[in-house]
Length: 473
Image (cartoon, rainbow, N blue to C red):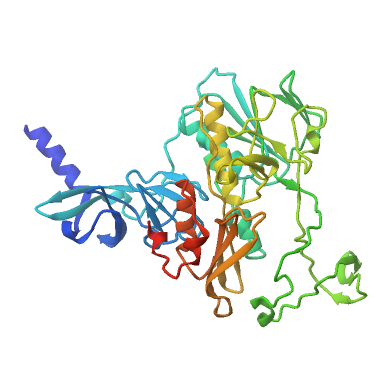
């Protein structure tokens, strides 16, 4: 090595920090451990005798991945189900948009060392490399809808070297936002819920057409028309318009008349009743009238009564929709019309864990996955939608997780105690577990999701067992 090379090597070493994190014998195959390098927490994993190190926090809401489920070469977040490759840090399942950092690992004399670049010591997530638009390219992908399906589709196109124009059309006044946050808090600043900043779209040549509503699609000419009279030609189209309007969907299941923990928080339920009128004065809500005759005083009314897919604008386009107005797609997110795809809440798709049963699932996580799969198939990279539904919510300070697809279940087996607000529930159909829900029982639901993702059947017998070690795989 000459002096110039030695100087370069020395400079590189000065830019890095290396820490001894454990002894080789301390970690067995299939295990992970949270370690520290210069105060930066790192997730250390051993798989088939090989060590890898990635960021310790989920890129979605910063949940600790050490509490998640490790299966093969990926770890699933215990809170919301995002998955990351533990060798590369790349995000493989959603929600969230970003990957996590990956670090260099070496083993010497039975000791494991992790090296981190000093410039990235405080980084907890990273944007996957994206490619720029190629000047002179006329090819255009038009994405209708301003939700995560459109955004992930756009990002996936750029990550996979798409050189053409990308246009997102939305009737919203803001670019894509983190909608789940709207159900957790009020009076949020719009800047605090943006999924990406305005500069991001400009940097990666993703055009945002806001305040524009698509009113028709004409596939023969590959043209969409807007409510303001303008039109736009496309080469490939994504329909990701989500839900609109409201339709009552009453709860009708065993136990719907039981007390939930919300009553303890002074939440009052009016069962077997419905709203007949909302009264107000000077444009403001004053009270709500029920069919039973009861009159409830109210300052705010939140309508959470179910929704219908926003697909009316497709009338006359010959794009197939089902009886519920959801756009019908195949495993590749393709509609019946060439070069038209659909994704997100508006789409009815084949669910792999239910034998490709055609379903419409309005989950935040699933919309992300749809967008990615649609983009890859636009690029002629055949990819099937095989994501496992994962849903979460929070009520009265308690976190609820849900995975699978429980439609048609005939029995629920509960582990733990519901009255103690700590339990795991298995939904059974035809002697198999088709879904699971939990309260304060992490990472059980994440583990069930990974079993389902691996294509493994979970039997009623397993769910009945007091020994749940099978969840660990």
